[in-house]
Image (tube, rainbow, N blue to C red; front, side, top):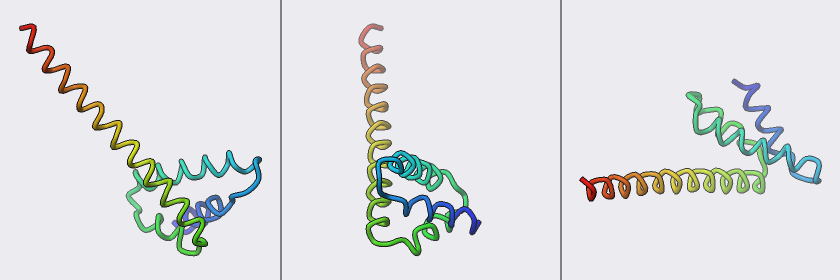
Length: 92
């Protein structure tokens, strides 16, 4: 488990030139997916334990945006399903 934490720690601390920006974005996305799906919750905070404040803030902001986006999509789907159900009952 320490290897995974160390790998995320290294990937999330790389923020810089244009060449590494794609790697950084993919690292954030992968970390967000891992944080959402893992059964090993201790890895998530451990990955950020030695990160500088800028890295922590960036990761937290990214995770907040991802969870908000997913929640917005889920609520939109539920709203549309409810509307379709209501429309379907009008024509019965």
